[in-house]
Length: 102
Image (cartoon, rainbow, N blue to C red; front, side, top):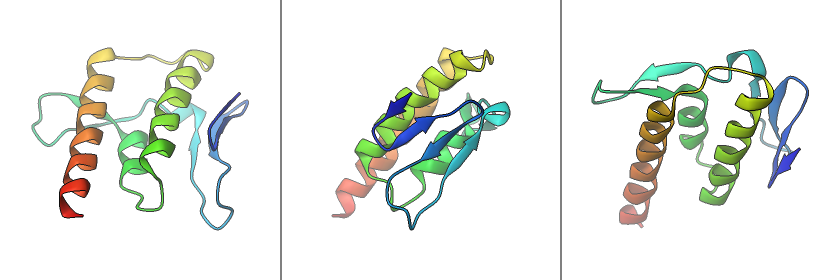
């Protein structure tokens, strides 16, 4: 299944956009988390890592969010809506701070 420049394969999510850049999320590690800055919620680590890549556009990241949810279901991994909401809130904060800088 393809979401924009992302393809969900049998065992990962792969970037298929600009060939000079590489980003791949292994399926078995897809739902890895990290503690958020406020410590209140866990954040989905791979979405945060992708958000920190300057070469990915906001549209690329939106597409990744859809691919992520699809892949979590496909790989039958645990999914926490609160963690996902916190991750997206963090992502939007990054977008807003980048917009303010410009």
